[in-house]
Image (cartoon, rainbow, N blue to C red):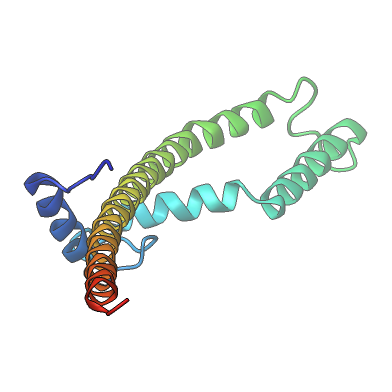
Length: 163
């Protein structure tokens, strides 16, 4: 029979992992890592620009801008090829890109932390299962020893019995 025992390092790691959770949920930021104003702004801008509401509003504004300038209902302040519109969209992209990148970097850090938490949970589960296997092996050995003693006692009683 092959027996697997946890090493001292594995037992130490299991104790560390049992204590590490500290009541924090996996998706919560650690209390020692408060978000800065810049991070909150970057997240809000990225969330806003990544929404259907933004796309619909932006598309509506662009269509109105183009229609007003093509039809010249109002003085054509930006005639075709819409250089002013192009400039405005370039400014928007130039300012939006860094906000989105900051938000993505922060999300990447959060994802990396979650992956580390997932890994720790998996290691802890594996070590806990190994401990359970060890306990089951001990219980099985004790039960086999007890049954062996009972059988030996029964054999002695049968041998001691007059024929």
